[in-house]
Image (tube, rainbow, N blue to C red; front, side, top):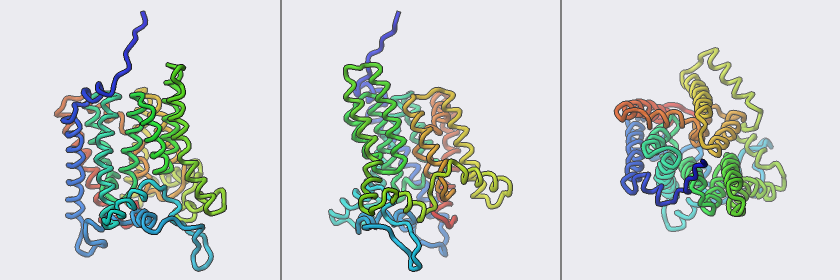
Amino acid sequence: MTLVTEKPTKDDLWEKSGGWSGVGAAVGILALTRIGQLLMIAWMGGANAEPKTVWDRLLIWDAGWFLRVAMDGYPEGFTYSADGRLEGNELAFFPVYPMLIRAGAGLGIDPGVAALTVAWVASVGAAVALHLLGTSLYSKRAGWALVAICCSAPASVVLSMAYSESIYIALVAGMFVAAHRKVWWAAGLLGLLTALSRPTGAAAAIGLTVAALLAVRANREQAWKPLTAAATALAGVPLYLGWVAYRVGDLTAWFKIQTAGWGTSFDYGKSTAEFLWSTLRSGDGWIPVSMAFLLLVALAAAGVALAQKPWLPLAVYGIVAMILVYGQAGFYHSKPRLLLPVLLTLLPAVVAASKARPRVAILSITAWALFGLWYGAYLVTVWPYTL
């Protein structure tokens, strides 16, 4: 006998997630992590540290680039230093987040306020989408665990900053929820926006393509819907890279700008391997050593997750995204942030927490959160380098 299950409806997911109370709990978990970390940042920021205020700390590093794109637009071409060397410029940054900042500023809001408002609202969207994704794939408890573990990870401080991670996580998690529920118009739209938010949106589009192919194999009569969604998402990254190439007049313009500004180029993991080898061999500095361990733990967690046979589209997305992160040269201290939206590395802890006794799960996640939130606060108050 063949067991046939009906396709779950949107109402089923809403009921399974706990409805408004379940979503409210997810947002409450997010709020606890954000408020707790902001208090840590205020406490750890010494009087002689720069910038001095919590607000200013949330608007440093990449935030300045996003604000310049939002207010001044993209440059017309390459940017050169006084001695003629190619430099990085705003064309390296994908457009969704700057467009939203610009929209807020167009309403008369201060650009910095608009940037943080967009990021914080997107963080709420990310919490809701993560809860729905964990619930859809596993259970309501898994949904809450996914929110808590993701939003208190060592690099989760960027969810409070004027960075694009909160938007990206909201979009990619929402895309996978829509794909899992077979709401293809939403999956395609969210996939396109995901791909126009960050370069790793290409990995998300590939994950959505896998979901679409699975749907086509199950029902060939409705193939155009999932295939259209996949094609829409796949177009995002090439569209932006192509636009940069056209604007500058160089097919490889975006890649040259990335390399010149941030040393980012794909070297098949050579730089990552060299960093891990030299750092763990010499033990030079606790932040480099801790980040090396974070990278190794993320690899191990991904291996455990794959052994548990997660939903194939999410697994493929995670593998491709991790290849992009580990395979590229660049600032090693940015890699934990780039891994935050991968989600695959979080699944073993999420599954374990959802199956453990509530007291054990709460204590374990609390311990993780205390370390992760403190670590992120340290990175933006004491650690002098960009994330």
